[in-house]
Amino acid sequence: MQPDALNPIEKRTAFSLSLVFALRMLGLFMIMPVFAVYGQDLVGYSPLWVGFAIGAYGLTQALLQIPAGMLSDKFGRRPVIFGGLVIFAAGSLVAAYSDSVYGVTAGRALQGAGAIASAILALAADVTREEQRPKAMAMIGVSIGLAFAAAMVAGPVLAPLIGLQGLFFITAAGALAAIVIVHFVVPHVVNKAPRGETIAIPALLGKLAKNPQLLRLDAGIFILHMTLTAMFIALPLQLQEMNLAAEIHWHLYLPALLISFALIIPMLITAARKNMNKQFYLFAILLMAASLTAMALTSQSLILMFICVLLYFTAFNFLEASLPAFISMLSPAGAKGSAMGIYSTYQFLGAFFGGILGGLSYKLLGSSGLFLCLAALMLIWFFISRGMHNPSKVRTHTITALINDETDAQLKTQQLIALGGVIEVVMIIEEQTVYIKVNNQAFALKKAKEILANT
Image 1: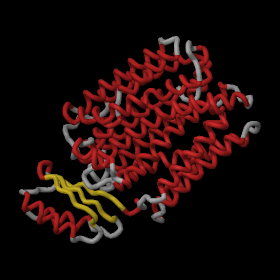
Image 2: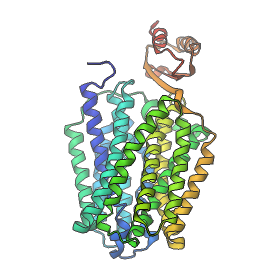
Image 3: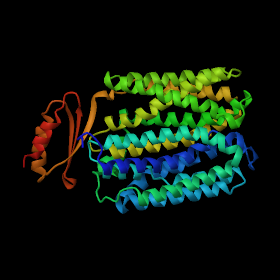
Image 4: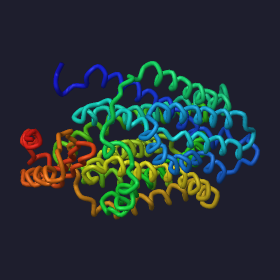
């Protein structure tokens, strides 16, 4: 087997956890393109309550993501994942049996209470080697994008046939299928990655919450998901006004998504190879602002609206793929898990507040006004992000090593700091773990391992 390839256990873990993530996200996303249209028969329907219903899961996700991750560190990943999936299924059933928008909102909030994202990512980290961990995380990230694409098609196709209730039943069934996958397919491996790689550590949260580089990225994911949630309150209704029947909205969404995936691949490759991650990042934010502005000005032509949606999804998918990688690159050594916990909280809060913003803006300003508000938010994000460091060259290596005592730790730390390209070194004696944050283009990992191998 090639040393730079996933081994069979790692492949099985990555594929199975990606499928679990996808099944869960598919259920959450399927409602977005259809709820504003097919929820009109629910008692209490209004644009504002559509926003609450779509975004409600984000609030409970945001509140419980970090606590659930910490519980998984104490009681094990699997019990937390099983419990979260059961809660998610229960929330789906509550929404399915509700005949009012209030009941659906409660069901969506209960879905979000099954906050298992951090536990799944931690389990993936536990089973994979440090050098292979980014590949496993990337596969899970890709599964979310594919689930989103599938949901944009499945929602409009299935809603006319089985209604919102049927969509929620499918979501519940997906959660139960995910339980089966976790039990029978995900490898039962007794291993635990260093806490700094996986789980939020309370002592670090306050410091990281004030880190200006991380704050820029946290604000970015907040605005990105606020925009996504808000847009899908207005876009389905706007397409109906343009005489595109709700059951064929996927005719617009699917090609736009597929082409956008094809477009972001060269963007991601070029950004990485030419150390232009920041430049492409800022360009994607402006592209999203331009697409939203164009949506506000497009009221007749479906071809123009398709181009707007294509540009929006291209920017969205590029940013969605880039932000977690940037958090990983720019987080302090040994604090990736805590940084990702805060990041996830901002992400889900964005979905919640996006529902509120979308509902209020659509009610007061209509779809064009909503799109312009979102475009203005993107410009704010652009100016916030201009001060971000370019993350292209930064990487953190996590190495397990024998650290005898405090004196040994200080000596090896001094030797590592002296190496070319080293930015920061953190040693956790209790975990026998070393975190080295480096400029990857100037750092020799082999020399660092030689230092740590000396007893």
